[in-house]
Length: 215
Image 1 (cartoon, helix red, strand yellow):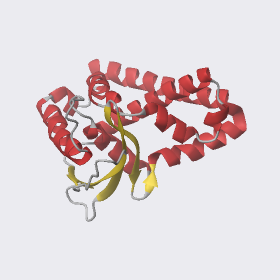
Image 2 (spheres, rainbow, N blue to C red):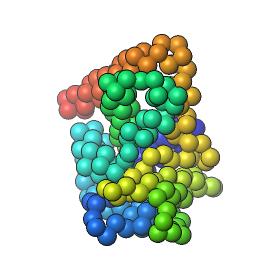
Image 3 (spheres, one colour):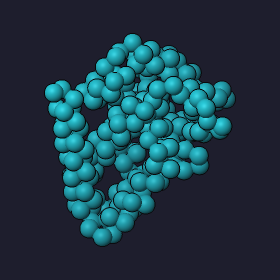
Image 4 (cartoon, rainbow, N blue to C red):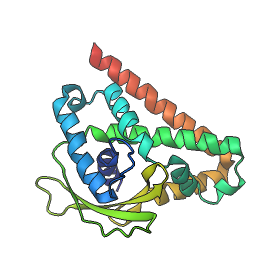
């Protein structure tokens, strides 16, 4: 399941919009159009294809971060513990969880090569403020596609992703179980420290890898 989530996190890069406009496109059209845009960027950039971490982080920052509701994602992942957290703790949780997800996407992006994403048409009612866009990730040689559902909400700033489900398993829910155990054992501050340490280790490893490649 972790390998599947890693693949999907890479594909998740493809659901970012080019920019929020007054004529906000429907969610399924948004995803379909942006798949083409991002793949064009990757195919044209040899550094991205080679796994350049710095460029990948820049791509994530430009194409992904503005189009995710990290506050809601963090709130859903933390679960009951969110209600008792202080404003400072909530901010720290959101910041570290965002870094965790961004690094996951960036790492997974190196494995995104020949997969094809099929976006299923969406019947959208004008009154709907939350939708699920269903997609399939088709990998050459694989017998069955990976089914991925994106949950998006309509906000004053356009549609934003707040969860995704892979083969029936929610990404946010999978984190919720881990976070709940950590909160029970070490509290909110302990969970924050765990995330900080994990992100620092990931950053250090990435820096070492980059340094080794440059030699």
